Image (cartoon, rainbow, N blue to C red; front, side, top):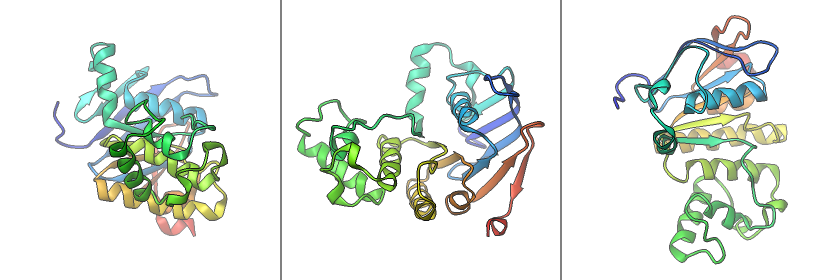
Length: 235
């Protein structure tokens, strides 16, 4: 598998997904360690975009290349499952166990043995929480008691826990109060830069996009064209 050139490329993509019109992307290329946000995708379209990029769904038309290979070239289910290690996905569709502690929730990417948490694993959890700006006092609180800002960081922490190369984000600030969005964007940008992570975020939150992404693109749903948005336009 070649990783020369863009980490992610979409060309002439069209995919029906039950919306009023198909998801269309004329052309998109994202370089290694680049942070990109796309506005103009609703929740269902964002979920389909993640499925297309990860190879869970194939486009009706066009081609998607990830890490130099076409998603259509994945030969079987085992190969596809193995490929998922390359992706970290931030989505509210990921379940946070309400009755388990935050530390136990952060343990799940590493092991299902969460009660008790092994000392070596707990050390990794504490480090992961700090990286995502989660204060230590939250680690023993139950998942059901976490405020929106901590829940958002929990989704991020679990997405990066196993060292992916491409971070995909589905409307990551949808449940956040407006005052929290810029701060979360700063955390995402810092984590991605420190890990050399490539990021693609689907969001309607222009404040988050302006902070988290180096490049923000507005999707014309009718044509699939992506128009660059200058950061100054957010203010």
